Length: 400
Ligand SMILES: *Cc1c(COP(=O)(O)O)cnc(C)c1O
Image (cartoon, rainbow, N blue to C red; front, side):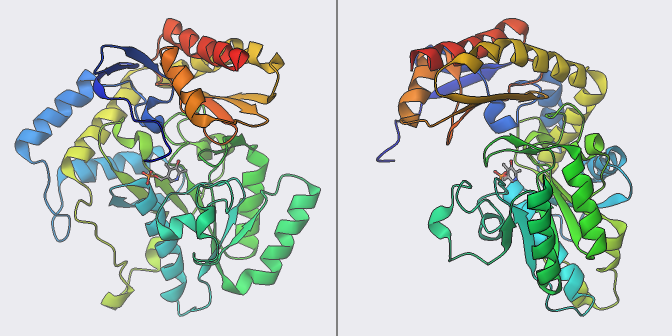
């Protein structure tokens, strides 16, 4: 609190706009950390939530079950490839990752294997802010470098993208197979760790390696899921089926905290036992919150009824054209676009606070981090607002 500028007071939201208490209106460039994929205050989601609020906002999910959660689970499984068919609901992305890591560890414990407790993860990765999630983030860029040495020790390596990194990766795998439970990766786009892209070949390679060394492959699609990269899920686009997948962020269309950890049948089968201690012991108080499930079901309706992926393709073109002039600016090292993600990477950002303030002064809500200025707008943003966002990036970076 001492070093960061005071937060802006927000009074209302609507569509792609954030209305401040002082009367100013900002175009939102990041859709509240990628959650508000349909824009704010979508009437269909609001109506579904209002109805659910009147019937039952919440009931505990231990020993009880309800239709909004069952329906959501079935719909998610129908959208995902292969036999990803067992859903575990939690209340945030970090917790969904904790559950995935717990599930993968216990998958081995339940089979009597006590040594496979570590994970292989990647530089540039981000998986959340809780202790186990932090331990699979990039040790430097994942915002948690202070904790190095304190966290559970996992193996963090470069993504296997070329001959050298593949050889290094293969070496770690071969040396540490006996202690590894699985591999965790954000497929196609590493988000909060630096907005870096990789191609599907990397994921095919990871799948093959996981099969060869008998490891569980976990895709963290909390950022990439629900259309952000241009297809409904990055695993679809890559044509690779993970053993466990985590979803959150845009799951409720930017209204409520909700997350899902979804496993393949073979993972579930390791828990299917007459011995009650084989169960996955995890049960958040607000597990499968009914109000959040209603919001998520309404969000899925919108993906079915409205042309979201076409909108993403249109945004992609708008980002290409609008951010192109920033390629020639001094200090810009890369401009890259994938789906509804536009990234301008700089050599350095000296004063993040001042840069954020200049964006607010320009009438846009853009939150640079590290060396990255990025746009991840709502899929429903109109051309004029998108142009305002890209124009602000170019003009603010030109003036810097
Ligand atoms: C945001 C994010 C998380 C953490 O989700 P929270 O809801 O913020 O806890 C985990 N993984 C990825 C890829 C994310 O983008």
